[in-house]
Amino acid sequence: MRCGLLLESAQLQQRAAAEGLERLQAHTRDLDAIVRDEIRRTLIDELKGLSAEVTAAVASLRAARRSLHLRLGVGAVGLGVAAATAPLVLAWWLLPSASQVAALRAERDALRRNIATLSLHGGRIDWRVCGAARRLCVRIAHGSPAFGPHADYRLVVER
Image 1 (cartoon, rainbow, N blue to C red):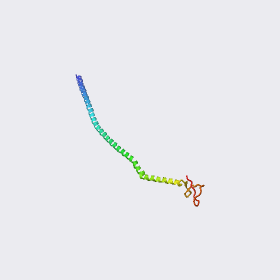
Image 2 (tube, helix red, strand yellow):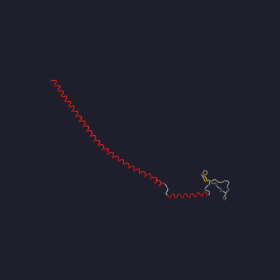
Image 3 (spheres, rainbow, N blue to C red):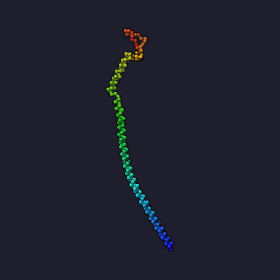
Image 4 (cartoon, rainbow, N blue to C red):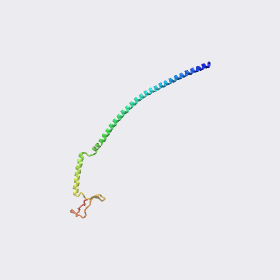
């Protein structure tokens, strides 16, 4: 009888332990669900905060991009204006004025008239610099007659 009571008592304790184990497993499942829910809520809250920060960063980058586009546009226009005006300024500074061009044309025409006159009056004479003293000399026609009161003039050879 004692053994029977002991066995019965052991079975009761075993059932109680099994029920406790089942309750513990149920609590574990409940705790697991609670922990998962808490983690999920925490993660969602953090992601919402991160989303707000990302949205602010995107807005800041877009503003910076607009500012950069504006600055690049202004710089490109400035560079274009500088590139267009530089040749004009250089031309104004380096090229002669209309009055200077007119004066140079008048001088050129006068020089052409002088060259024509010289060509008619012996301007095509073959002359050179001769000797150690570097004096001016002309080629003469040896077969030509002598002229002048002392016969010291001769005809020169033209080119």
